[in-house]
Length: 164
Image (tube, rainbow, N blue to C red; front, side, top):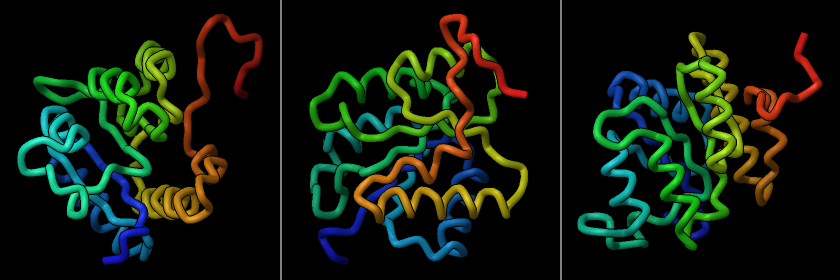
């Protein structure tokens, strides 16, 4: 495995969603390394390089994080807040990847420093497109525009613009 391979960390407590992400990445033939975590607790351990994740050659810091919100013990908001307060992950792009459409969740995610808020799709075709877009972002030395079409716009502070 080349040391220059980009890494996407996918954090979700739902085993079916993790399996869908793995399947989509295989089908999309992405060039990044997908690392999956099943909890916010494991995300903390991975991102901090503690315990089983101490070997950074085997467990590199991610170049992009997909983070579910609704998880037991430590939710996605806590992981995001923690990541934004650490020098190693402060600038790592984070996409909240959630089934939530609650405006308060979207606003809170952006206020904590999320770069994107992507609603989990019901279509495998759209899921493949999302992971292809993530691959493009990572392959282009961070071209975040590829993920932008999948992201819910920030709806905070009385914005005068509206989506029709």
